[in-house]
Image (cartoon, rainbow, N blue to C red; front, side, top):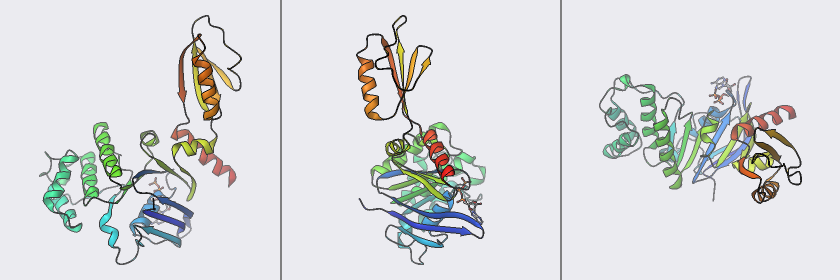
Amino acid sequence: MSATVSVTGVVKNYRTVRALRDVSFDLAPGRLSALVGHNGAGKTTLIKLMLGLIRPDQGSIRVLDEDPAAGEFSARRQLGYLPENVAFNAALTGRETLTFYARLKHVKPSKAWAFLDRVGLTDAADRRVGTYSKGMRQRLGLAQALLGRPRVLLLDEPTTGLDPALRQTFYEILNELRDDGATVLISSHALNELEDRAEHVLIMNRGLLAAQGTLSELRSISQLPIRVSVDFAPGAGVPAAWVNGASVATPRGRMLLVPDEARKMDVLRAAASDPGVINIEIAAPTLDELYAHFLNSQESAA
Ligand SMILES: Nc1ncnc2c1ncn2[C@@H]1O[C@H](COP(=O)(O)OP(=O)(O)OP(=O)(O)O)[C@@H](O)[C@H]1O
């Protein structure tokens, strides 16, 4: 599986601001990657570099085997982009707006209009964009980004302003594209939303890549404990033999902090065969917790 986007040793400064400091990672086809980080961590700068809007001071960026900042960036047509603050000409209708972008991407307008339906804008297609709500403009932005079956889709804070129903549709559309082999990168602060959706996570902190990997890789690197909560039947004695190590009392039993998957399985086997146990719940470290962990470890290493 070769990378569709390669960022290697990238440094980017805006005068005295060190926006990116030696950042390297690859994005793969058929994968949804999440780019997370505090305000000012460098996420938008990375996306701008991938789009070729700015150049790195050091290092290199390759998108679909080309330099995006080169004059003739032919891969541009295979790139979809939804900016953080999407702005359209308020005097044009939704359909006219999409027709304009379809021409730029050499897509037949009639094919483009199907996307208005996909993002739920059919009824508003012939209204001026100036009358659209923020969520409707965001939907139009998404339709625009999807034109021309993009091979690389870069989305900056895409779900801000979307209602829950459209957010669901939005991720369904992204899953289809991803299953079709597209590379999808979402920059977002909505960690809980990305938790079950992103196969790959990039954590940025003050211009540095603090960590990257799949959720399970990040869990394993972080060594944060898995929480196993076990409830006991009233009157059942707590079996000290397997409730060892770090554990805390809960209203109906004990919560064990287990260090890894192997130990988790030991606990589960023991709990499942204990007649006093009436319920077991497992909580792996969340993306929120991993994010906080990697940020803290990087801050203390700096
Ligand atoms: N054109 C610019 N001129 C000067 N400084 C800039 C410029 N663009 C970005 N910066 C600075 O570079 C750093 C990284 O900004 P960037 O927009 O990439 O962060 P971000 O992670 O996208 O933040 P947010 O989550 O707030 O959108 C910030 O300190 C920002 O102030």
